[in-house]
Image (cartoon, rainbow, N blue to C red):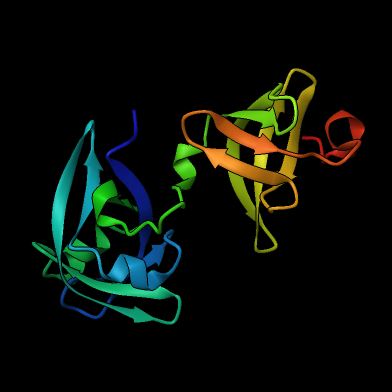
Length: 174
């Protein structure tokens, strides 16, 4: 089951004295976060909605005025808090997918269909996405580039064409 709310960023600071918050964006760009109709704060198992009254991009951050947050004290109380977006509010180009939907997918060899492992996490290093793959022999990182990753099917798995040695001793082991 797909998660209805996705992590979209976190409050890193206040901005000014009227309750504006400064957000770090986890989206593809801060513009995506700034255009959302609302942000959601996790309270236990529930999500509390706060409409975005105004948002603008400032460098790589988003400055946002949220419904019900009108003082510096109220904004400061949110510092460090993760913000979420509704899945359907986030734009997703055709053929693209959310990173969170990859977690747990089987990694299969493109030619044989053999299951090589499963995706534990997706990390970014030096500006590149790496799939952290768990196999019976350990964990390795697979660069998420078209030379290796041939097809992503959210129902069937991630189909890869690994170079010789990547899966036995050539991969970066954890």
